[in-house]
Image (cartoon, rainbow, N blue to C red; front, top):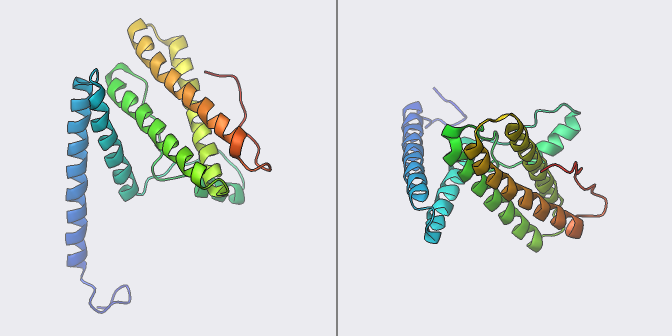
Length: 203
């Protein structure tokens, strides 16, 4: 039977390739867990960040392989949704980690990852300041970061765990500084016709 227009197509070979890819993904996930555990065991050592950066890169690789993206949950026209889709990237978290005590390591690693990703994008924009798609992507990132900052604030107002609030407040400050860094970049370099993201004074 000819399938996919190729007389040599063999579904068994395809399944073998799928199995091999899944094996590689499993190995990446296992390595990420090892790196994460090592980082949190030695996070007071400045050199440990090197291992965290490796874990971030593996996560980006895994998300790209899975084809995940940052879905836009808001309504809008087909044209605006298409523009948002083009502005998104497979590397940005599609959903933020839940704010709870058992997820603290993941929340911390996620904040580090998002900062690294945004800083990489900002560095790229320094080299390609006329790339409109990259500016669109940066604004999408900025909006997501602002949503996360507001989620932290909402958690603080309802939580009765001071130690947890103290830990997460540090992560919120990191994201607030990141948002300011993005805003400054937009003010300096975004094309004039592009509106700056709305600032609600949160954080």
